[in-house]
Length: 292
Image 1 (cartoon, helix red, strand yellow):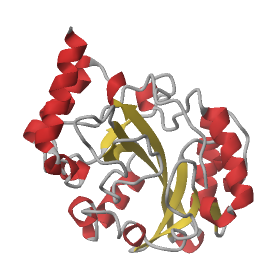
Image 2 (cartoon, helix red, strand yellow):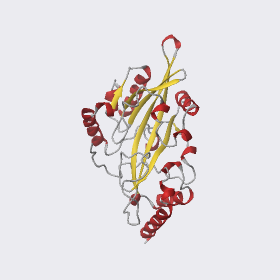
Image 3 (cartoon, rainbow, N blue to C red):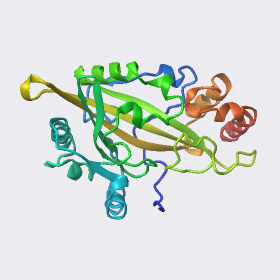
Image 4 (cartoon, rainbow, N blue to C red):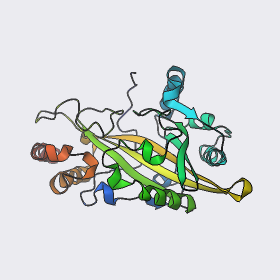
């Protein structure tokens, strides 16, 4: 499937920059925040100037490959809570999961929890992404993420259970910036699991592109029939793309420090370490050019 082109600066003005030379991904954890709709950084749902184009493309995706881009199961209380809450945030009175998700730029996943078991109850995949909704629904959080590189060093098993419990019981929302990769071309759909860029990195490479995801969780705690616990959380994922030649001088310096001090960070699945010497020369040359 061919995807439309979106402006590389569509992420403004959220000021996300994931390259931190100090903290490897496994130590980042989740940033908790209290939602505030007038504060871009602390919004649960992020939208931008490309929203209408995303929505139009999402409708086309549903018509061409329904199971890949949308699927849901029973209308459980955790889904009703998520639909009710998120509908208020986007200013629409939607009552169904499918109608709500059609108006969002994010992937939307609802995870249910009963006793010690958790599973994906509903999923809607937004462009651009490379995974299928039908492959997630009905499976546990761990099972869905099994193929993610280094996942057992990030969250898995008992860590997953503790994370889900903490999200559901908290009044806060949680954010994580992850799934970071560096490419020689702006490939939205290419997940970090596909570590090497399609085009080789050379001294003559014109530009580099940093792809990453903003992942947000919000929990819902309810008591169902017979006083059994019927809980869950909504998991939102929005993909961003940064172009090196559009970074600020400070961000480029951070990129340089990352390449110098943390080349084996879990962010990049070995890409920086593999190209470290060339990458340092490449960045320094462009820093010098920008200062002239």
